[in-house]
Image (cartoon, rainbow, N blue to C red; front, side, top):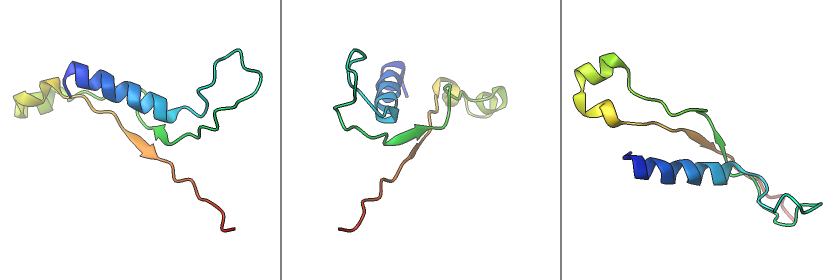
Length: 76
């Protein structure tokens, strides 16, 4: 991603990884938001020196990874 695209992806993944978005001064959660993804990489992964030598266009690449969490609904 470009730097602006990376920021959008970073913020999107961070929001989806939250389980509550209520203001901190609320005594109890009222938003009913559930965590949708688990972030797999704490920091962005950059290409190695060998990768950049083999593929110069990869020098600006940034990798972020997340795993989708499946929420199962019970049968009523």
